[in-house]
Length: 285
Image 1 (tube, rainbow, N blue to C red):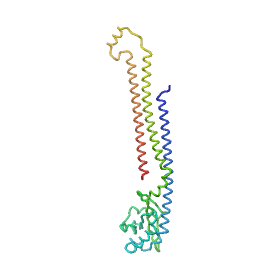
Image 2 (image 1 turned 180 degrees about the vertical axis):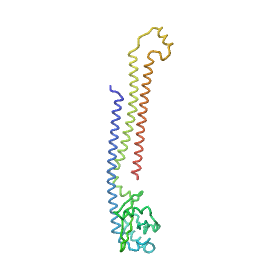
Image 3 (image 1 turned 120 degrees about the horizontal axis):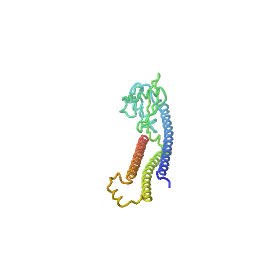
Image 4 (image 1 turned 120 degrees about the vertical axis):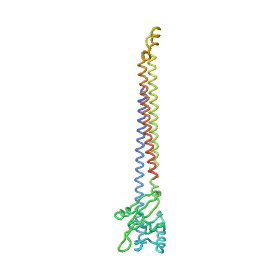
């Protein structure tokens, strides 16, 4: 019969290999989801840019870029924006000067406010293409618009919900990501249980083997006088004392090795669970 420790190592290696395969599968599923999500976000950015240039820009006049829009002009522009821009997935509109001042917004309380956090984004957008960013569930797209003659550059920020945009990307591969992560954790757990069980079996098997060897080969009979003399000797001078001490020391070393291996495997599982929590938090964002 083969050594139980060897069989346990083989089985543990099998579970670890399965866990690694599941982790690779989880990475592939996450990568496919991210690739599809990036494509959907790019489509949403392109649609928002087209809406800003083709629909919002023709509604603006030169005076709208000179300062915050208020009064009758605000009511007129808001009515047009409600009808032509906010009728689809867009649920928020901002018109911003290059210094971050809000020139127009679908929420009147925001008109005249300063958005210094958007200033760098506005400058980067003016020097390049439309840019989108995600803030919680808000998907915001900045587009440069030219108003009046000579043209004045302003930034249009169209806001929409992020969840409907990426929902399609999570229908196919994203569920398999969590299934693969769960399967990997289960396999690592089975590897730990296997290591502990077979280590204990190995220790018990070796102990039983030593007992059978001791019974099969008894020592030579001694006279009663010799046995009486041995009983008066110190423990370390009794026959077989060294063998007993060596056997006890070997057993303690084996138990210590098993406990060390168990602690190492438990620590590995804790790290995997922490990684799983981090991936869950990232995916929820």
